[in-house]
Length: 215
Length: 308
Image (tube, rainbow over all chains, first blue to last red; front, side, top):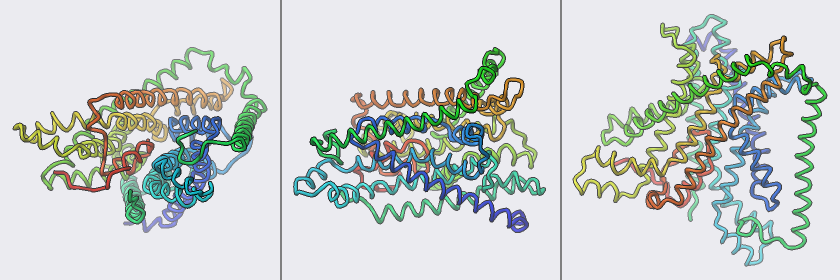
């Protein structure tokens, strides 16, 4: 326990760093992912093509490489010094956005075409078809896999440890400088992640039960 | 786009609107590309001095060696993950609670711990108790642990999705438990889950890049070292481009294999009966492909029946 109580300042800061990366990355991922997801299902061929290209490229890029590009190649290109936390958040957001986009797209695809056709047949407008028929059904089948995406995002925040951002993943580095037992530090970090992931999994299960699709 | 849930067949006004949206999309993409090219040119990234490093055979040899080291880690991790996946899957499907429960706990634990933290444990943590691992083994073992546990869930979901009659028919012709598993259930489950298994291997390939952080000499570490070498003009941007092409190219290739296998599977009559109808989401914590996930979930009451 001494590893934690003697360095509580650093642990709090690291947890805060992880949460900043998580929520910042999630915010970017949701906004960008929704746009790309919308492009992937849009009736405009060129928008679909751009969305597909983005998703296929980024999904086949290692996250570490995305971080690498943002941290080392982008600053000299822009000629600016950019805060490491901001760069890491952008890298996480852009990477996770592809998974958000795919989840949204496949969620919309689970709604049977007949549903929308029936809605149009009884004279609903596009907005009404969306808000009363398609989106409520899509939302239900999107939530559980979306939580999986966010669990992966939470675990991916540790990659920022390799790019000088203080978070739970970089605790080993910081505390070994204070002469703490590295093995113990890492075990505690593991415990923290198992706890956080269990929390999110529990949220996932309860969402799933609340919004079960009855078809 | 007829047949879409979202849109009706477009009329003249919708067609005109779609054209405008198309033009706007092209302009937006062109703007982003133009900005990047402008920055590349403005900061002199295309000057010969920045690319001179790539005229030396020595540097290409180093790049080739780093690629080989990455592939070596991937190959070992892939084989290990498949083996561990089978062991854990069979453990989770066991009839004996004293086997099932510990294996379930281990699998869930391995899935919840970030791969990088596992690498830290192996590379920086174990020397504390006197076990020194090379960075290669730290990368391989961490990847095996994580991907093995995910593959275990995939295989288990594949087995559980098979119709009950398969198992019962196996018993009725006099096979033992091991025979039913080996001859009846596993072959069907593996075939049905093949695309998912290959996409998990793509995740493994991607995650070898994490070795960079624990100083395994793969492509990214080489890129960082060469990118800082002043004798060849610090070509960090150029190195990043080259490494990105290699990494993305390899992952795309493996993804392509997954897609081909999936297509062939859809045509094959052998798997028609064994189509994945998983009651349990096989990849809850998985960061890879979520595309087929909904297809898996759809149309099945998510009954978590205990393995029989």
